[in-house]
Structures are given as structure tokens and as C-alpha cells.
Length: 577
Image (tube, rainbow, N blue to C red):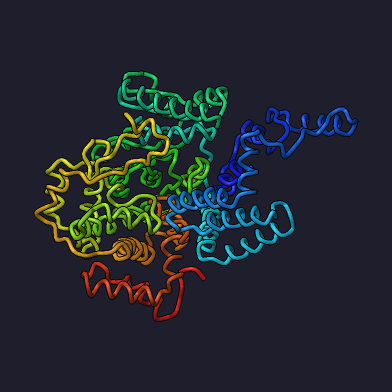
């Protein structure tokens, strides 16, 4: 029926075998291991006339009643598809034309009694052809081919990693361990204490149990996966015996250089000579971590994004003396873990955080120029980002965002010169740390409604509101003016995009395609654009240079276009040919 079909058509969502049978999309289900035998047995029974095909097209009486209603009465049809349009626009912010076109075709087919008929198929074909020529389709196709390209290892000599060691059982360490055992590779998860190890193991167990609950895996598959995890801590005499069996060890401890030096030294004294030591650092130079190593050629950065099981991007960061086979092995392991590995230069921020720095910098300028900080989030969500800068800062931690900002100032110079440092210090002094600390830029409503709101199925979900404590800290520095959403999204996106182009110019990334994939999967750059480089191509390189120069004249040198972009404009070149 339409009620079940429309969400599936619009989202392309998958269904489990049991759900498909309930919806009558399939007639029969069986154990995956018995698929061929069941198919052959069914074919034989049908051939002999010993099995009858189940009746199709019959809906439960309630669904049938609804179906007849929207087919027979235009006012019901208008109401139902009108609500569907509102929901689609709310979820996509109008950035994806396909859902609206799907509703249009389905509504038109029902109105003309053309479902399953030639006229209906023609309407669908015409709509498909129209959508295929949109800029959104071009961007998404580019993203698909970019993903496909990134899934091929460009480096040779990758070693076979049979066992991985993970040092640190915190959020990152347990996440790395989880995605590794899920792909069939045994992991030794080590923490300094039994308590820390227990927290990490519990996190993995809970994540696996959630998958069982959602029928994404069976209890047996969960037990098999968990059996690949070996937990050890400092008080266990055998922990070194387990670690020395590993082919690659990932450290995921605190961002403390002296601690990482100590870990590298300890691992090199325990592990076999060809064992790769990878660091999950997000802010420290990999070359500095390898500085006192006796085998620096075996050290590489593997920067995972949080939460690890959900975020697909993995930045691989070799330093100057990292062996190619080490890079190849790190990339190969990332691919096995289901990640999209992008090789980046060992510079502050690597690629994604390096682009994010100027973006955060501009948010700390605009936050003091608007009359409502929620305008920033609204504008960037409308542009196509999954969350706005205020929510992003709260999610990653305001202290982390400010640390990233400070870390990049020295390296990027004028490109990080927008924000008022004194204002940022005042925000920090007021105790604004982020969502997990219960005190961020915004106040977030509880996930579950309470009281009368919980009894109302039509009640709209409450939105975050500005935190009065943050507003009070910002008040002395406020210079509110009239800035519209278009200006906000233009300035914010320009800082990110221009820095991405600087990264390509300076060899931080290997190609524009790598940059597009990394920006989308690392920070949520709007997927329908195809990425920052495709976005510039779509607008026109010369036109974008003019836009950046206009912004630079009005707001300062932080908007000055990258020399590479200027040269490309003069030569009439594009990032993607």
C-alpha cells in the first residue's frame, strides 16, 4: 500500500527479511545458509502443483480503507500528500529534489488511476530523466565515484594484519576495537586499569547488543564477534605476551606528547620488529610522536573520527620517513574496517580539522554579529550541513573546538584571524564546555517528553535554546547587525572551502576527489554538492574568486582566495574535468 511504500521509495531504506515478508514484498524466508536448497525445493513444489502462490495485492482492512479513500477523494489525497511534502521539506531543507518529485509522481499516478499502467510508467520515466540532469544528481554521482575510488588502495606492499592491539579502552579505543573485531580481525584491547578496561568492554558489548535488538545481527554472531576481543590491563602479567603477537598497534590515549613518547618506547621494546605503531592523535604532529622512536619508519597516524562505529572517514598520516608498506598496511586495515581512508600530510589539523578551524573561527565572528545565535545553525542547516556551528561546538566540546582554534593560529596566520580571542576566553571562563558537560552554547531539551507533552502524539519536538550563561559571557563583545541567512552560510562555507583549496595547493591531500570525500564524511559538508571542490566547479572558479575577493574587501584578508584558485581562474581550469 501507499502508506508502506512511500517512505521506502523516498528514503531507499532497506528492510529485514521478516519485515519484507510482513509487508508481502517476499513470499517466504529461510536461513541464509539454506537459501539455494529452499529455492530449489520451492521451485520443485510449484512445478508439481503441490504449492500454490500466495494471494497478492490484498491489504489489511484498515490499509485497504485508507487506500480506497485517497484514490476516490481528492481532498484526502491532497491532505495526505501535502503532509508528506511538509515532512520531506523539513528533513531535506529543500536541498534534495527527488523526494518531492517522487510524491508528485505517485500522487499524479493515483489521481489518474495510472499506477502499474503505461501512463504511470511514463510519468516515472520522465521524472527520472528530469532528476538525472539536476546539479544535485551530478553531485551525488560524483560522491559515489569518489567513494569507489577511495576504496582502492593506491599503495603497494601492504602486510597481512592478523591481530591488532588497541591501547586505551576509552570512547575512541573501544570504538576502534569494535569496528575491527566486527570485520573478523582479533583485537587485544589494553587499558591501564581493570576499571577502564571494563568500561570499554561494556561499551562494545552494549553496542553489539543494540544490533541484536535491531535484528542487524544474531546473538550467535554477537558472541562470535565478542570472542575476538581479548581484554588486558597493566596488573595482568600476561598483557605483554598478548601485545607482542600483534601486527599493528593503535594508541588511543590522551593527547599528551610525553605520554605518547613513553608508549612508543614501550611498544618498541615489546612488539616484533616489523610491528606498525599507529597513533590516533587528532592534534599532535606524527613526526613529533616518532621523534625518539628507534623504528620511526614503522610509525603512522590513523586518525579515526568519533563515534568510530558510525563515522566512515579515516585520515592516514605518514610522516617524512614512514615506509610505503606501512602506509599501504594502514590503508588496507582501514578498508577492512569499513572506513574511507584518505592519506594526508603531517600538518596541524591534518585535513578535516584544518578546514574546520577557519569555519569555527568565522562562527566566533558571526556569533557576535547576529541578534540570535540560533540563526547560525538555521542558516548552515539550510545550506546542507547536518548540524550548525553552535550545535557542532557543543557536540565536540567547546573546549576541544577552542583548542583546535588555538592550535591552528600559529600555522595558518591571517586565515585564523577573525575571532576575538578575549571573547573566547570570556566564554571559557564562564564554564561553557559543551553538551556532555551540561553547559554549552545551547540548552537542549530532554530526549523524551514528560507530562502532558508525552501524551500528545502530535506535539512538535522542542528545539534547543540559547544558554543564558553563554549569552551573558558574550554580551560585552556583542555587535549585532542585520545579517541574513544567505550571508551567514556564504561566509561560513567560504572559510571552509578556501582552506580546503589551500590544503590541495600545499599537498595536504592528494587530490580534489579525496578532499570532497573527506569533507563530506568527516564533517558533513553537504553531500548533494559533491564536496567543496565540486561545489566551486558548479558555481564557476572565476565567479568564486570574485566572491572571495568581495568578502575580503568587506571583512578582511582571512577571505583572500588561495593562489591556486586564482591561477585556475586565470587559466579557465576546474578541479574536476
